[in-house]
Structure formats: C-alpha cells, structure tokens
Image (cartoon, rainbow, N blue to C red; front, top):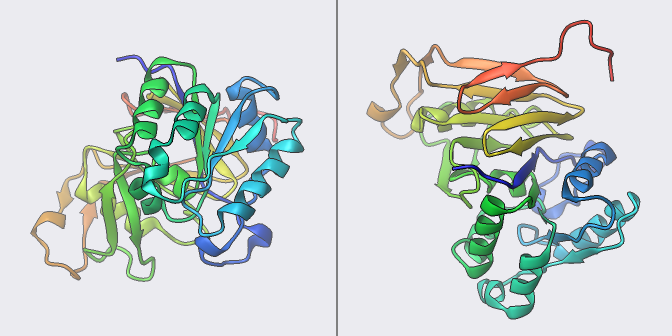
Length: 285
C-alpha cells in the first residue's frame, strides 16, 4: 500500500553537548533539520503542532520549539500538551490533530507517548492521515524512537550486547520495518541496537546520531539530513544468531551483520535494502 505521508525521525541534540538525562534537558535541534521539517510541512505558514508528552518539562520544551520555529518565520505553531491519556480523547486536541500540517513529538521518555497517546483517537487520526495525506510526523529522540512498531524502551550501554540489556515494547507503528535508536554515537548504543535486531532479524536497525535525521517517504525510501551519521544494521543475512537460546544476562554473538554508515544526502531503499551514497567528488557541505 502506498503511504502519502512523511516521517522525519531525528537523533536529538542536547544543549551545549552536556550529557544529562533526556527528561531533564531541553533539546535544541539544528536550524538545518528544523528548516527541512518546515519545508516538508508546506512552508512557514504551515500549522505545526508540537507534542511534548514525552518530556517531564513540557511547558519549557513547548516554548523552546515555538521560539525555534519562530526563528524560521513560522507563526502558526501550537502546543498539544497531553499529560493524561484522557486528554487524547478531548475534542480540542482531536480537532488540532485533524488539521495540523505537521505533528512534532519532543524528546523525553518514549514510553510516555505510548502510555498517553497510543491506541487513542488521536493515534488513529495520525495513522490515517499519515497513510492517506501529505502529512508530516516528525520527532526527536524519544519522538523518533516511538515511530516504529517494535520500539526500544531503554537499555544500558554499559551492558551492551548482553541478553536482556535492551527493553522492547510496541511503538506507534508508523513504520513497521525499522527499529530506531537515538543519540546513537554519543551514548554508545551500538550494543543495544544490535540486540534489538537479533531479537527481530526481519527488521532494519537505524541508529541516529545527534543533529541527524531521516526524511522517509512512501514508508520506503529515506534521505539522511543533518550534520552527523546514520548507522544501519541489516540482519537479513545473519549466519549465526544465538539470541533465542541464551538466558538473560549471557553474552550474545552474531555473525554477518551487515552495517552501513551514511551521512547527509545519502539515500536508502528500505524494502530493497539498497543504498545510494553521494559520489566521492561531491562538494563538501
């Protein structure tokens, strides 16, 4: 089935690069990425609705995005401040979800998005509009990770590639064939994404560095945007995967896990699992 909407998952970008817990930190996304969100949403007059549900400081996060989009000339930015599940059934929020050109999920705790929005009327509206309209769903960090069907809920980088080090749950299901992780380089999340694809070897693992995102069209092809790297784990040709036979806490092993490292402007076909990279003589940006 053809999907008309656009997904823009972003790897997050912390203020001044200081390592703090996501829920207690405002996120600042580079102008280049936010400008692309605005462009794909229809320009500066687009209705952009920010959903800070994942954050423990939603008021500050919402104001931060109003200012950030304001610097790009956007004057039609609204906040959908959902703090309780029943607020996803309120008429005003449902109406806002139905007329927005872009929904932007903030960072924080991705499980909060599922707990308060997953399976509600607003979730159903977003799914329907994403499938049938030129409608943008963007999200940073937790807001990016919640987009997949199989969603990473957490996991210690220090215990990477130990069975049970990664937590998984059902996400928002906007894109079924990816598992998305964020802050991938800075927080050393290679091990937990590798375990995730070992659990679900039919899926692709996508690790987004900070200030880096994807523009996914037709639920199939994506373009890399931003200043960092995207790491893809393709487990489709694994020759050894002992995840299913191990007990919790045991070291895991994989062989023939295909890895791609992509950067700004590179493209990837998800169904065909083929990449198109910029030629070596392309001008530097």
